[in-house]
Length: 313
Image 1 (cartoon, one colour):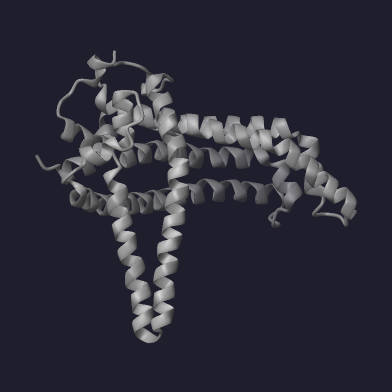
Image 2 (cartoon, one colour; image 1 turned 90 degrees about the vertical axis):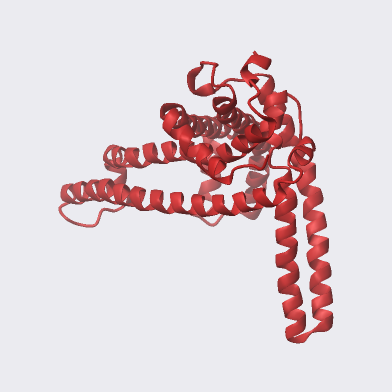
């Protein structure tokens, strides 16, 4: 049975309509988690050390002191970077699992489908597997493009340039087709609670070109949704920020406010930013559903109406 591209494209939108609060919660969860990671990272490095680093740009520092300060920052920074990378992987796996769970385990009730269990651990392992795979892909891609460029330059002229152009385009399309054969690794890994990267290749046999078409349709959908959001958020931001700036200018006697005046009115500016923040967080959650939903729907179409919730309850 061939997959339905129309059903897959609409899967994310159907999820937004069915569980709008959960979808928006994913965006707020991402924003809050990232904020906490940044706050912990700053606490690890230390505000005094960061303040000293910032002072390097406002004065003429001694080279030895500057080198010593940069070294101190780098030593203090690596634990924060490590925390950020680990935290980012865990947070991403939790949100990804929440999207899949909300579509495959509709019978299980939990707030926004967010939790941490075997499925999330399996998705974390899948993400870690992507690191060496991406490294190999980078090396192979570099070798292929370099080879095409070498042959093209050897031929020279218009023919050589056309060879380079069409060779790179052809490689990009082939690479995209191959990558899409592995696009169901995440929902498969979630459903089976074990890494199923190569299992996606077998499951998508005979569906490569439909997945190729689905990917291009989704690119257009993502572009349309992003443009629409940018227009709406731009208008909202202009209204509230413009109102806040008008208030600051009025209290400054109509003069253009300087940095001190802006700092003195930071509560007003913060309140003006809240609508943009709320819209951004909600939109982030919507994009999680729109981006992940189609591939979960394709997986569900290919494996049939298996009750994942019952199997892994």
